[in-house]
Amino acid sequence: MYIDVHCHLDICKDIDKIIEEVRKKKIGIIISNGVKPSVNRKILELAKKYKEVKCSMGIYPIDALALSDGEIDEEIKFIRKNKDKVTAIGEVGIDYKEDSENWDRQKKIFRKFINLSIELNKPIIVHSRKAEKECIEILEELNAKKVVMHCFSGKFSLIERISRNGWFLSIPGNVNHSEQFQNIAKKIDIKNLLCETDAPYLHPLKERDNTPVNVIYSYKKIAELKNMKIKDVEKAIEKNYYRLFS
Image (cartoon, rainbow, N blue to C red):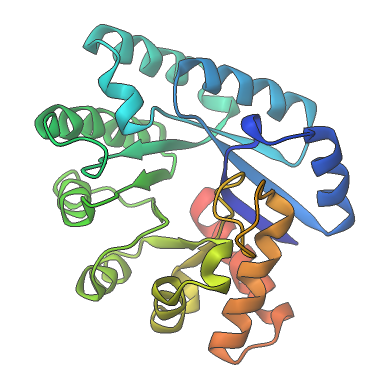
């Protein structure tokens, strides 16, 4: 079984057709990530409709800045209320590329979601663009254990730190052509890896409209880079998934 731990199914085109293809290609689990309150609710509905779809609820760091503290707290209450339907907390984190002014507030909001993930005993799926070190420091400070670093682009010293903490790096399909992700996949032990698509973004062939079906590219490239059989990569990633998400 193939697993996509991070995508945005709600904005993919022709979801019914994607799910048909997913079933043909033996992709058994798709975690669709929320980026704001309205999307969290859409993903809940998708998870009800399709057995393969799992719901991760969160608020993207830049979207979170547009909300008041009260609105964020209300969404946290909503997530808490639906905890039995939620597989993970995400997509949450810090983004210094898109924001150059509100770093303290981003950190404050991120801490709220880390504490929620610890309280609910759910993995947290972390966005850390241009703020990789800051995200790791806050996760360590709060003693987070169940962590997925999504599309991580930090320094190799930080990658080693992630590994020492027993956290996971999710490798997107564009590992097919990205030297950064190829180096990560080569360097990190298979026991710390998961796969993702970030669909509809990051198409492995640099085309438009990526879908969860293309998570297979991540598996194939990891197998090639680690000189493993794809069947063994598939088994290892599935084992990692259940170790983290159970």
